Image (tube, rainbow, N blue to C red):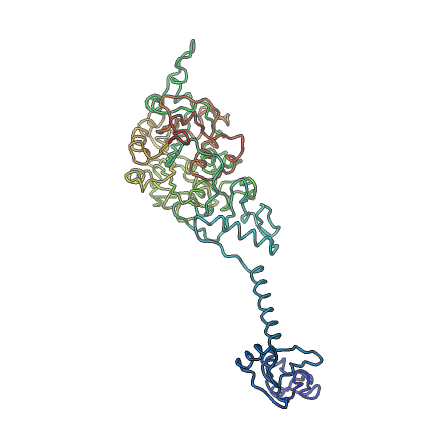
Length: 537
């Protein structure tokens, strides 16, 4: 073969391709039209470096042994004169080999820097791996899009906003086309959040929040509130069981207020820290999406007006799932709609009027009393069907400690929620009916193993119907727990955000939404007067 095979003309300029007759330049080896090769195949440059050229007068086979011997002798094999390329000289094969290895090493480094980072699948290491990987990618490669400091690339849509992984404790949440489910929690929020720096005032392991609907503090605890006050006419509590018998067994939060005059915003606040908007303040008669639905990267609060929160909105159930803890919602009569046949996660069609906005004969379930279905991270995941269930599932779950969720939200239907309004047909509700309902629910919880194992029951109301114009009405809350003193009263100002913050700190996740603000106080040692003192338990 000609030693100048890199530059020797193969044919006259403009000569046709031997296969398709397309015009080719004189040194063109491959036809651009059909891909046919003209002339002999030439050696790879590395192969050329390894083998003597055909024109060498005394070719020498450069075997591994020969190269090794040459290396040991500190010289090159006989007959080697380097590898000429025009006026360039690559030198010895050791030099060429080193250069090739150097190029490969550079390629590997560039691949590591520019390539995607693998996320850890470990639940315990999930967040640290996510943050470390994203930090490395952002620092090394300067990637655009969603950023760890909470800023959002201009190409990011409203439903793809990333929630910050910083001090507030929010984490990056993907927006999958089909939300994934987790082991007992909301799918959109998925991973766990980092541990809060504040220590819980009590080692709570299981919590039940029971929400009535409508009764004010005075209607339930009037007699207890006025007892012992000189020259004040006692207000007789309408509740003989909750207002007297249960009240004597727990700690009453006498200054616990709602955050809205409507029921739905209070329930939403309990599991997300989201404030009211115009539509939620009317209990969402139409089941529409929140618009624009942009989630603030620093606060986690969703902006706009509407009912269904985008999947990037983090909820307490999402946090529980990320922490590997089980949550459930128990709703009386959720399976009582014969037309739909739905027995769990019942909610209206998206964009439609809510047919369950008011009680119906034989069906006292109302959508606005079930906050879980207003968050797409929950309602669009499989666990909505398994975790947002009927009240009939409560007793079986209490039977065994391992079957009892860490967090449970329990809500009666319209006939037993304490509301004075009709509960459908000729059925009669009111506080007396709520008392009878509580007599069947509360003892079953108190007698469970889970309650004895760090349990807490909080009974409150989602709003005060007797004070419809007052957003921050006093609804009160009764705390029953082995850690709460019997018959005690705490007058500290609390609200539904306070309860959420208390639960999040107790279960080791950072407060979210309005609960994350410093003005909101979690239940303290006055509420948990019987809790063990740190270091003495």
